[in-house]
Image 1 (cartoon, rainbow, N blue to C red):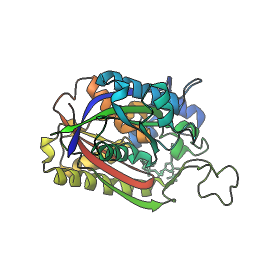
Image 2 (image 1 turned 45 degrees about the horizontal axis):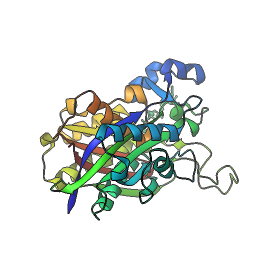
Image 3 (image 1 turned 90 degrees about the vertical axis):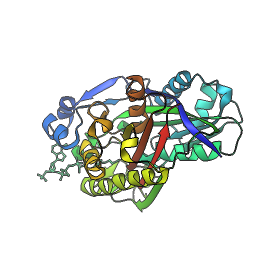
Length: 323
Ligand code: COA
């Protein structure tokens, strides 16, 4: 069976920087409260002319350029998101048009919230295993500033906008992703509006804004993140120290700290960027991956565990190798 490697990465962050002091001008909060509880110091929000889609497209273009892959080598284009600029056409279809991908490309938006990018990698691996064109473009992109309740200081300080992407290439002899995943349907811990929300609030499954029970989500995350990473390592038959980097979903630095402690990982291999991005949901894993590649912390032959968790509830992890 054909396995996969990551052959290129890209990311795009919106231009507007919103610091914790800026947040304190908008809601009753402080830099001290936000940074000590989450590790967040600033986040990016879309400004005029920027959107979930423009970020997704720009990150995808950068990943394709970094990979040196021609558009007609791409047979799969997936965008993980729960804040798509449009329900349809999908962001994946618009990327097909704007990046000049061939019409026989499998284009699909994937919603598994903050685990979405890793879910999308697993889908891409399965599709590439069928044969055909060797490459998949996998994007995570969010505009969470559109669904935040600015009257709820517990949630609005946590989230940011952004996009990240990678190109997976399949070949005989390349490794499997050894992906693991899980779902636990729950609308109370974490939810965001669906298309029905505005039309009939009373019957809507979801509220008009993102809502969250922070403590319940914290407990969930610190349960599933270490467990799913341990399962990936077991499936892949590698020990924690064989892995060069751990790229965890950036929801809260304290959640990552718990996973690092439970798994006995070297903290230097688990550095994040939440201080500058906030929680960008499906985009956080590929944004951090791209930053590590561009600063030279990850390179050819390196192996990286990628893991996400979030609304749904969902979680997923995998082990990927860089070409
Ligand atoms: N600024 C200042 N005070 C705030 C605040 C803010 N932005 N948000 C809440 N508070 C207050 C609360 O009102 C409460 O005050 P009280 O004790 O007087 O009632 C106090 O801070 C503690 O609130 P609590 O919600 O218990 O805080 P916490 O220590 O659980 O931290 C989170 C809150 C959200 C940071 C934490 O629960 C968390 O990170 N959860 C996981 C969230 C997450 O990662 N979600 C995404 C997953 S993909």
